[in-house]
Length: 272
Image (cartoon, rainbow, N blue to C red; front, side, top):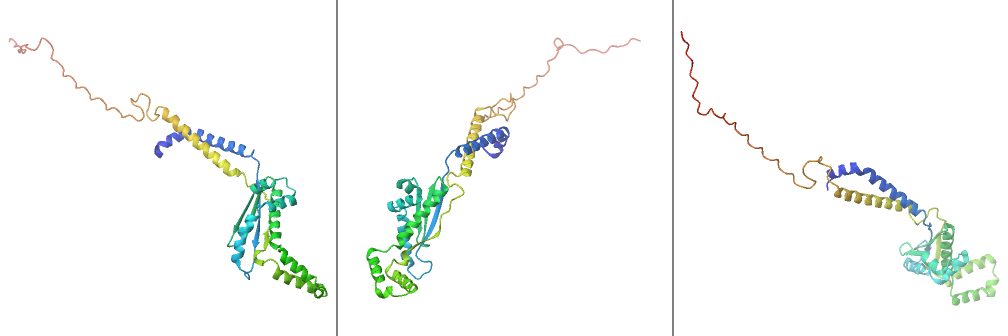
């Protein structure tokens, strides 16, 4: 069916097509407003220092490790306890998404919840727990640091000097700076819901109503007689018109009966 053929169709059924589209859009909006809204909060953390005085390849590789640790059992339990959430570790694991970028060394942790404030609290709690884990030292290094600080020479120093020496010792015997996780963008309660996307649902519903109404109109037209020819035209839509009948020959007039052999009339003479 070409565009020219569709114009009469639209002229007859435009009101039904518009009505079907509007009704479907309103129905979709009414349905989506009944669905509970879900909010998503995310926090971003940087692995390693900002400058390039250490190997960035090691920091990039550790970013994937931290992303996996974000959904580990111990990290989830700590976040639940700190926020007082009623979620179980299984539910929080399903609501949590952690991704990493080995080039930028950014770890993004996202948490979904029906409460926007609780979503931000859980995301920040997970990131803080990973940050604490990144600064923890092993037991052997901790024993060395404690024994160093117990030395009388160290205790005899002034407090500012001891702080400087302790920071230097932590850099040497503590965890590497390449593995340190620093929160650079904490999560905030989102203002808009992540699910469901109301405009998208309304648009898809309206398009569905348009499609269904269009199919109905085409089906109705296919079952109805053609309206392009006036009634009594002699053929239906899709049939071949019949040729006009040839005109019958006009009969020649017949001569009057009884006069075929009549003699010609003689002229009358006048008598003087």
